[in-house]
Image (tube, rainbow, N blue to C red; front, top):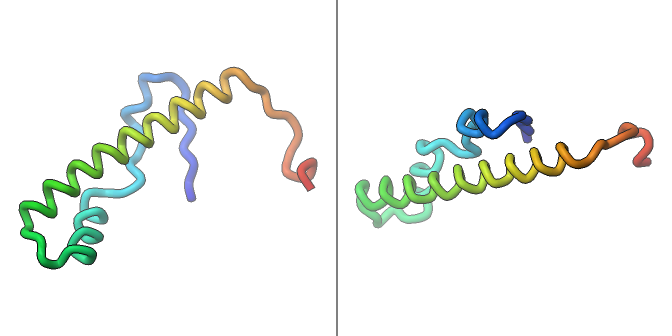
Length: 79
């Protein structure tokens, strides 16, 4: 898993999506082979927008956390 850290809210639009539209369409086709292409694409676009919204909320949450907290130490301290 790759974690992207962006500073400032102006950069939130540059956050890469977790899943591409192509990946979502492929998953819908696999799970719902009886659906029409139009319905699959429509549902995939809706889901992609929700995923993008959650990705942005996650980035804002991380930005807020790291702007208010200073983490010290390293992974050796956790053991």
